[in-house]
Length: 223
Image 1 (tube, one colour):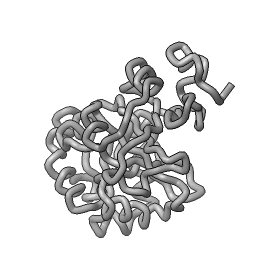
Image 2 (cartoon, rainbow, N blue to C red; image 1 turned 90 degrees about the vertical axis):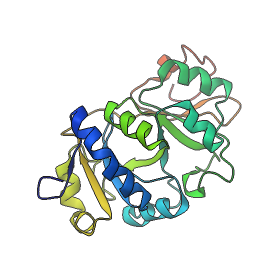
Image 3 (tube, one colour; image 1 turned 90 degrees about the horizontal axis):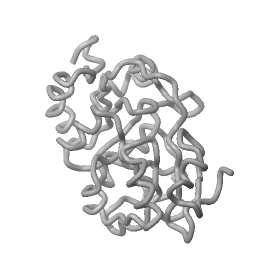
Image 4 (cartoon, rainbow, N blue to C red; image 1 turned 180 degrees about the vertical axis):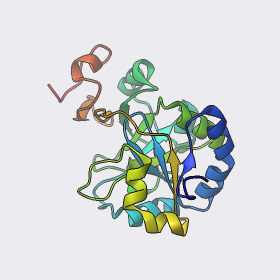
């Protein structure tokens, strides 16, 4: 680590490759990772009950607000038993990797309940962030994702914001911060629920409903 051992450089391909072994070990110890994405910095863990609960405790996340999963390939969906419905498959083929989160059915007995939303599905995004894609492919499994901020504070767009808000967790080693530099401000990913009869926008974002309707004309919401 550098910067007073508070962050791990995660910018150049060499830095990313050099950090992977340490990151994978951190995740295996069921600890929380902070990382840059294509929108804001996120917090994440391995996809198992103990890891997810560690993130819930640190973030003080209400049970009614699940986390999503980041993937770097459809094989990661298959291993968790998540299902790409016809509409979801059309959207994924057009917009993944990209700032589109799909809520998918399936994953019974394989995905912790904390990751399942009120509609019964699991939110997933194939991230276009090259560093994260490299990490996920090396790790071989999805990681959870939620914005890196305390309640009532805007999502972090720089590692310094995370260091300022979570110093105790960083010093204890329960939180590792990947330093991918300051991110440009951007809207969040668009979230589409694909668990029902018709796909439905449940959070507007980068991709507009009209853009999404080019491949799923029966999309509802965010008119």
